[in-house]
Amino acid sequence: MPKELLIQVAPEVAANAVLLNEHLAKLLHVKTSEIQHASVLKRSIDARQKAIKINLKVNVFFQGEAFVDSRIELPDYKNVANAQEVIVVGAGPAGLFAALQLIELGLKPIVLERGKDVRGRRRDLKAINVDHIVNEDSNYCFGEGGAGTYSDGKLYTRSKKRGDVDRILALLVAFGATPDIMVDAHPHIGTNKLPQIIQDIREKIIECGGQVLFETRVTDILIKNNEVQGIVTQNGTTIAAQKVILATGHSARDIFELLDRKKVLIEAKPFALGVRAEHPQSLIDSIQYSCDFRGEFLPPAPYSIVKQVNGRGMYSFCMCPGGVIAPCATSPGEVVTNGWSPSKRDQATANSGIVVELKLEDFKPFAKFGALAGMEFQKSIEQKAWHLAGETQKVPAQRMIDFTQSKVSKDIPKTSYVPGTTSVELGQVFPGFLTQIMREGFTQFGKSMRGYLTNEAILHAPESRTSSPVRIPRDNETLEHLQIKGLYPCGEGAGYAGGIISAAIDGEKCAIKCVESLK
Image 1 (cartoon, rainbow, N blue to C red):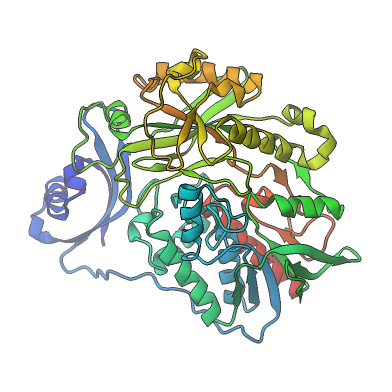
Image 2 (cartoon, rainbow, N blue to C red):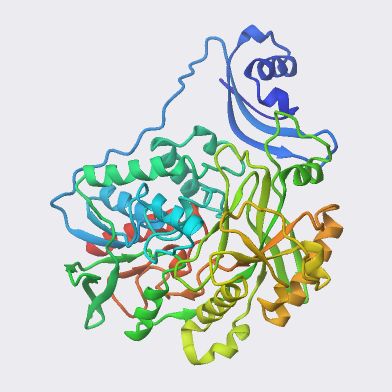
């Protein structure tokens, strides 16, 4: 029988199969030659002590024991070209995994994506970075793969349903992701690797008889007697269906406005908002690893920090080691930041959203917008930042200590944010209560992480698209909208997910409920 062990080893041992086998042999009091193979099941870093260790869960196979290095395979997807159709609005992780699940269960998905395919999006990303031109349908948020495709590909989730998480990870591996994502405590694919995986998922959907339509924006949802009848696209085309999975993402403001106009129940939802902070990666490494140089066997260090300030949580969000900051506006006249890392995380800077929890009462100045009050609050800050930074895709920026002291920074060094920055006192961007919390919070951060509070760190504003400002309520059992039969609010945009994995899980759940309702 193979032997499962939990061990701690030096980083160089974890990185070398020969050294790992030698370590295991000593631990088990056997000869190295007696070990046939050691499978690493889980891997994480323990940086709490000066001597950094790697935690490993290992399955040790001895000579003579059956060991097969099995390859993860895709499910046996059937052809559904002639099956009943389900409309899936949005080709982000929720929409794509809903489509795959529908095929697996025998229904035909028609996936409608307002943006371009994963390759076509690149021209529009270049346009926003270089020419400051925002394409409202094709940008970092909209297009094949959704916001995650070109904003890092983090696969970590706090979901307790590990079986669901492992299923999604396994599917991603089967579509070409590195098997390491099944092992690492904080798995990550990388913005450079995700596009091919997304393309392969789309090709599988089409191969199995599903449809994927790009540059097809939904402008109306047809409803009769509180039941879905289908949708209408921007060119006036009607597509009929009894089931619509609405997986549009957290930035599809036109969909929220459409539902509000049609008197389809939606609710304002609290979210978090703040800035994106960029440090030299070497500085974060020295803080987290307590060393001058991390060496070749440790990855660029991440960080996670949470503080309570004046009764509100202020915390790091979507931290990107060895990454860059990207412009994520979805309409002209606004600026928005986000961060991403390539698979090697080999850029010179580290960045993270540093955000503050908002409450529904914060949206009172926008009460006339009803359920869209939070969205209008969000828009007002993005538009103010755009004006203050020069009405381009440059963002307001400030050195971190200068921000805590309400000083305009005399100069802003070149950062990873390609469109550029404008030196602005960030207190002008945010409401007073939010500015006060962030100033106090950064001071507290500096006490917990010595060296974090520094003028080497540059704050970019705003980080405002952390989650949806709207929730589309649904029944806990059927997952259908509380009023509209056949409408399945899904993923981040509906308020039921936060990231690639949880969105994919929610997409699968909605697809399963669609099938169950048809039996």
